Structure formats: C-alpha cells, structure tokens
Image (tube, rainbow, N blue to C red):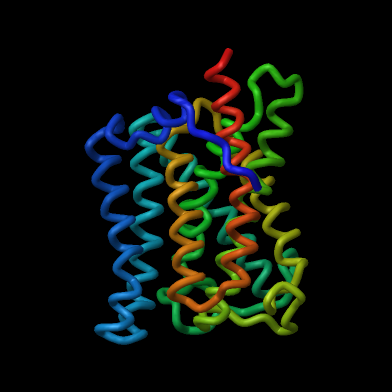
Length: 266
C-alpha cells in the first residue's frame, strides 16, 4: 500500500478542532481510554484491563452516537441505533446457537451482562464501527457513480469486515468467545468473514444511511486502524493480525484519502 499525501480537503475532513465540543470531548475520552488499557494491565492486572476494554467499546459507541446526533438529530440517530442493535443482536444469537452465518462459536462468561448467551456489549461493538465504515465508503464512492448505493453498501461491508482482521484473533485470545473448530486465519474460520460481509451489508441496507458526517466518522475509522495496529503489534503480542489488519483496513483508508485528494483537485 503506497502512501498518499493528505491534501487540504482531507486535512479539513480529519481536523477534530472543527467539530462540536461534544464530539471533541467524546473522541478524546475514547482515545485516552484505549491508550490506558496497557497501563491498566501492567498496574492493576489483566482483570481490570478486560473491564477497560468494555469501557472502550462504550466510549467508542457513545462517540459514534454523539457524532450522528449532532448531524442527524435525536429521532434518526435513535432509529439507526435500534436497527443496528437489534439486527446485530439477532445475527449473533443465530450465529452462536446454530453456527449460521459465522461458523460455530459460543461466548464465554467474561462479557456481562448477557441475554440468551449473547453479551449485550456485542451490538454496541457493531454500532461503534458500522457508521465509520459507512463514512469511509461514502468518501470512496463518487456520488456521480450510477450504482453508487450498491457500491457503497459493498465497500462499507468490506471496510467493516477488515476491522475484524484485528478484532477476532484478539478477542479469542483474551477468552471472550471460542470457536468449535479453529480456522485458517489465526484460529478464526474464514466463514466468519463471509458472515460479517453478509450481515453488515444487510444492516446497511436496512438503515440506508445518507448525508453522513463523513469527517468525524472517518476519523474514528482511521484512529481505530492506528490504535489496533499499534496495540496488537506492540502490546498484545499479535504481530500477524496487526499486519493483516493494517493492510486490510489500510486499503480503505488509502482509497478514502485518494478519493478526497481527487475531489479536492476538481
């Protein structure tokens, strides 16, 4: 993946100082929470670090909701939250009970509270990355593209699934869930990624996101990409997933930067 210079359009898009105070505060609290996780593990022990990861999910999902609320208002944000939370929970319930569409797995007792064996934190994890993936796709796909809605759904599903190149190996290693038959990708079955593609595309179709605040949401995607790469390569001792995740999600970051660069030249 080559490095593409940031032009003024992209710099403005990622300039957090241009965002509302609530967005700036939520971004800062989320990033500081994630940066503190290794220190929690070193100073207080692994149990506190695991709790800190749950707080990180809450902070990131809250940040995404605040960004959406500032752009869309309460009603549309609440509707989006409900659709994503309900559909992702049902997909996880089906998956953990039947193995469809992700492959056979089950959650352990580490993440609480749970409903029918699915931690209630899991739908928030879907929420915290789906809108950023939508924003990345919105930046990549030209509005003039005749089939822009279809391409946007596909690219957002791919960008969202690329995040799982980081996530699943890390969460399995920490004992949050277990695969019945370990798979090819660092113990994760490849069917899992097909499931992520399918479910994220269906949820995107159900929400039909338009007029996204692409700047702050794409910043969340980029920061997640950086934090996951650094965390897994330096602190979690998972260089393989760090490399694959860096290039997998980085492709979409690079495409978004390139699209913004070309847009700025028009």
